[in-house]
Length: 134
Image (cartoon, rainbow, N blue to C red):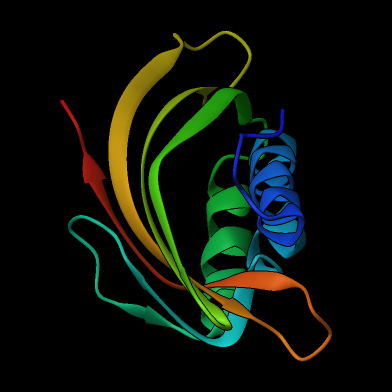
């Protein structure tokens, strides 16, 4: 769903973020990031570069071969544009299962994301830091 005032290219990135997360697709998730992106997650060392994200996502998918993301919703609270860069802070909710008979796990988080317009005009995440909201 398009958010008011969000440029079309950034909205496409937001939409693909939701679709890739729900699909639990390692390659689609990695493709959301620039080649030199940085990901800061709670309790984990920094992940640097799209290849590192892909390896992390593949490892996660192998550890949870029957895992499924049931819900992922993100809300952008503030978006600041400056030429080919954008900064936004978001809150998100997610629900997932490690396997079909496992209990549903839910969590809420906050993220600060830096986006960069690529030479082809698409937007990608350049730097992302997130933590649990509760």
